[in-house]
Length: 83
Image 1 (cartoon, rainbow, N blue to C red):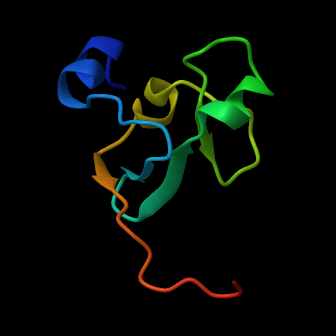
Image 2 (cartoon, rainbow, N blue to C red):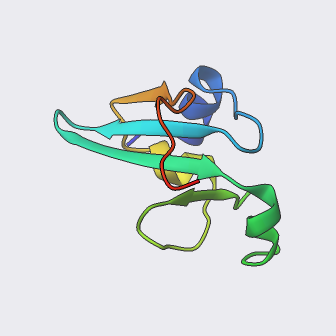
């Protein structure tokens, strides 16, 4: 487990709307995203603003990456269907 200091030194918190891919181990990946507006509906803590696909409450960035082996930026969509 990484310390909060280690995470802060290696990963500057990205801006609102950012999506990241968090790698935990060799084959486990999850996507997280920062949504400040939605987070206000869930938590009074301003640092709890990162969501994941598991329908959990928003958490601090550190909580999502404390066991990560790597964190990658998720770029622009290649295709968007159903619009």
